[in-house]
Amino acid sequence: MEDRLYKNIPHKTIERLSQYRRALQIYSDKGKTNIFSHEIAALLHITAVQVRRDLMLIGYSGSLRKGYDINDLVMLIGDLIDSPEGQKVAIFGMGDLGRAIINYFQGKRDKLKIAAGFDTNPEKFSHEIAGVNCYPVEKAAEVIKEKGIKIGILTVPGDQADETVRIMVEAGIKGVLNYTPTPVEVPDDVYLEEYNMISSIEKVAFYVKERK
Amino acid sequence: MEDRLYKNIPHKTIERLSQYRRALQIYSDKGKTNIFSHEIAALLHITAVQVRRDLMLIGYSGSLRKGYDINDLVMLIGDLIDSPEGQKVAIFGMGDLGRAIINYFQGKRDKLKIAAGFDTNPEKFSHEIAGVNCYPVEKAAEVIKEKGIKIGILTVPGDQADETVRIMVEAGIKGVLNYTPTPVEVPDDVYLEEYNMISSIEKVAFYVKERK
DNA sequence: TCCATTTTGTTATTCATTTAACAGTGCAAA
DNA sequence: TTTGCACTGTTAAATGAATAACAAAATGGA
Image (cartoon, rainbow over all chains, first blue to last red; front, side, top):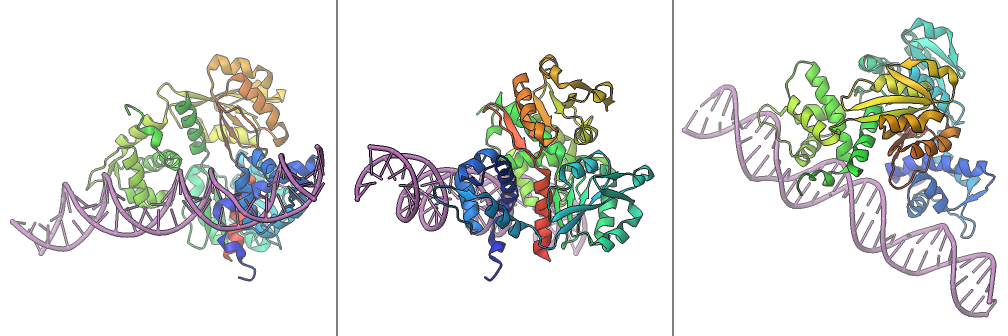
């Protein structure tokens, strides 16, 4: 009961909280200090009720006439989803996708940093992308332990997914985000999220086909 | 009632059907001709019951002792989610992410082809990636209409998302997959799917934090 | 021949998530 | 004042999705 109100928050709400932060950022950049539930909702294509319900679940109250205080809410979401001491991420596979993620992500979050990249191709080792150093995979265990990295993003070609994820797990990675088209296996104590770009494209194609 | 059994298939089932095809492919590559529901399930980290239920919904029956016929099932899933005459896709933004998608995707599906790329940077125009030509965005309307492209993937930098999606819609795109960190707006007759890589990373980070 | 095993197909139940309904509140304008 | 409006916060209902439960069937042995 003490500080674990958070355990009962639905997964979907967790996902949205991260997106609310973006919506807040956008309004903050416009010079706004307050925001209404329906403004957040419109940006993210969901309903205002859902926004209010989510915020209720995390125990935040807005003001009746001015809506939610952007700074307060950003801080509260941070308290909930960020780790206070920060977390480090490694990219496995410094190809196009790995670089894209680094460029999109790096510097966007205080508490979450991409701390290393790994590849098998020696040409990559010399380069540094947005401040991220690329090491040979053989050094993975060493670098990951030294830097205390717990999260790994898998962006190697599909046929190297299994072998690479084995290395990740062995090195002590506790959360894997797999962008490879190949499903992988991890032990029970490792959190796994798989995202398949091909399926997403097919899904869009399906609904376009069904509508016309 | 005639040929629209398909309308009542849950969205989540549609997403999974596309993934079943991958699982089937993997088993087919091993030389197998048949597959059990629990084999599909194990690969995709779901339950066998769910697989059977999904296949029931699309009206496919396996054999009691040998499971499902891989070829038949691939064909049936194709009948359901693919468009018989094929569909074309355009990539807006030929940066790292655009190239990554082309390399992962191109050639993997008979009925779905990436038919053009667009960018603002003239350096990109000369190149061709995995058979995909890159055109200047100014030519978008022309190229898209000429080739009959209906699906667009948005991979430009976040600050160009709004302007680019406007161009896409104007050119006649009916399905948008937005990989940009910026949420966009489309008219009602355009299907929109947004995927935010940053949120996915944060989600993994959150569950890693909560477990330890 | 019959029984145990393994797997499918389907209905019923439970669980999760979204949406609806509405009470409460503060401000502004009349 | 007081009335109307535009919000929030919360409970209740509806929808959607996953899981459980189990009947039915085919095979391979005993």
